[in-house]
Image 1 (spheres, one colour):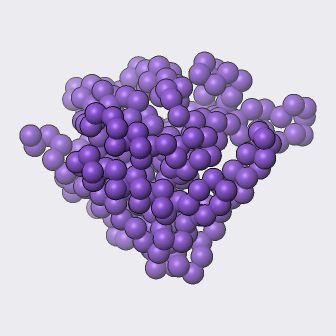
Image 2 (image 1 turned 120 degrees about the vertical axis):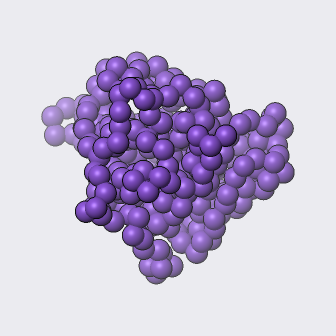
Length: 292
């Protein structure tokens, strides 16, 4: 069962990078382009190879620090899953570029970005490919990934940078399995994270995530703000139907009176629409921060 699950999941994950004709309409706007007249933050790459939550794994991670950061003033925080694909200035999401532009325009607060890749296990012998731990880390419900984030990664960031303790100043983002992971962190720990950006979210039965719509309806409303994106031509397979799952999540948020947005496009299972929406999503998520 485990090998079947992993093989099927890898087939799903492989489709993330494939753009179909329905996706060609989604192109990055000016806020996702480098502008010479705005201050540019810096990005530092790190490696995490002493993981306690997921022993034996190793991973790359990055810290983005905006040019406006002042160590005497607590900065906001935003964490991205699948960090390698989000941190590149010429990649799909180009999050540091978007941060530069929106912070300079006063459309989001001074925010430190943390970009984390999923863990992997080294090959059993020389020449073997590493084994990804992505599905276990991202698709599993419960608090294990939150524990890794809150007890390992963020304390490391706080050693060097002054982060706000205000949960309203903490956001988290992800795509596909990274999206359900991001939501799980906020769901388990709204005292730590209250803003979520979810694109092509895997709220399906890869590892039990299909229960979330019912859980949202039955649990006491939590102080979470969420911006969701999905495409009408997203995946439909043995784990579930991604468009229906995201619609079900959105319906549950509406029923419970959550502060949410759901944008459903025509796209497939890739990041093009979500990347295009990133500037608008950040403006919406941060729209009233510091103004209350």
